[in-house]
Image 1 (tube, one colour):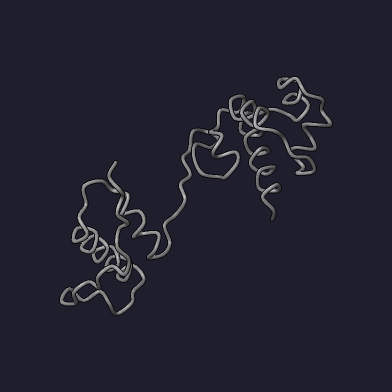
Image 2 (cartoon, rainbow, N blue to C red):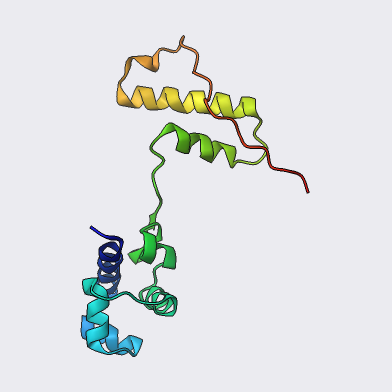
Amino acid sequence: MSLRDDIARRLTQAREAATLERKDAAEAMGIPYQTYAAHENGNRTFDVETAVTYARKFKVSLDWLLTGHGRGPGGEMSEPKITDEPQILAMLARIEGLTDTDINVAFGVIRLALAKQAGSGQSEQNDPPAPATRRREEVPSQ
């Protein structure tokens, strides 16, 4: 599926959650039915103003409409999953006040928990967690 198809699918989900037919949605947006239908079919892109209008009308976040992350239909939040070690380290590095040691300890605990969840043999309490392989980037002072 392409990005355009993903956006079109979410636009359809949002409209259906609002219990509107295509023709009613087009009318409420003040655009021709053919234009709206082309947006939902993924046959035509739309500009930022139209995306904002869709998000407001269907009560979803613009982020969700365009990426799938954020507040979707019914107010449900959809967040990206952190799936690998570099993402875990990047997330920990963004937490203010953590030292490199804090990051290494937290990373070790998370790795241990993930290993337990996966059922791998690394769940022994006696095994020390492996240190983080990437250090937090220094932010230059201004």
